[in-house]
Length: 158
Image 1 (tube, rainbow, N blue to C red):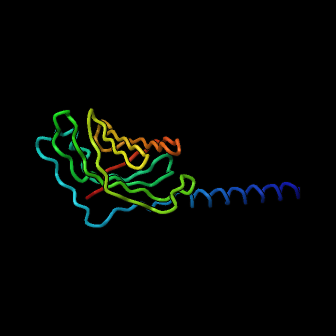
Image 2 (cartoon, rainbow, N blue to C red):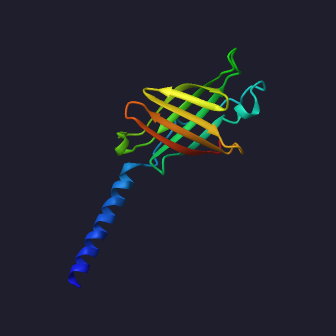
Image 3 (cartoon, rainbow, N blue to C red):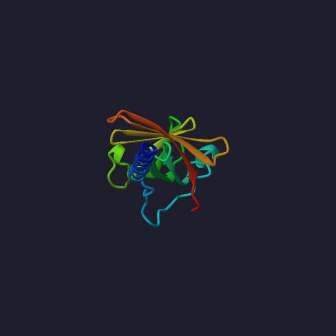
C-alpha cells in the first residue's frame, strides 16, 4: 500500500512539472503597437481578397505559439494578378521554438489565388480564408529549424 502512495505522489509531481513546462513554453503575449491603422481596401479589390483585411488573432499548433496578423493595406492587383499587402506580424514566446521574447514587425506580403504569403528571415507564413471568411487558416514554415506547423486565427474586433 505504501508503494502505491509513493508512486501516486511521484506521478502527481511529474504531472505538475509537465503543466509548469507547458505553461512556460508558450505565452499568450503576442502584441502589436497601439493605434495600428487598417486601410479599407479599394473597391477594385475583390471581396474574397478584401476579406483578408483586419486584425487576426490565434495560435500556431495546439496553443504552441500565440500570434497576431494585422493586414493593414491591400493594394489593387498588379499586372501579374498579385495583390501586394502591408502587414504587421507578431508572435509570442515559446521556449521550445527558441522564441524567448515576444516580437513584431512590419512585413510585405502578397495575395494570389486565395493565398496570402509573407516571407521574413527564413520563415514563410501562408494563410487562406475559410469558406465563411471568419477564420484564417495558416501554415508557418520555419526553414532554418525545419519546423512546419498549422494555425487558426479569428478576426478581432477593430
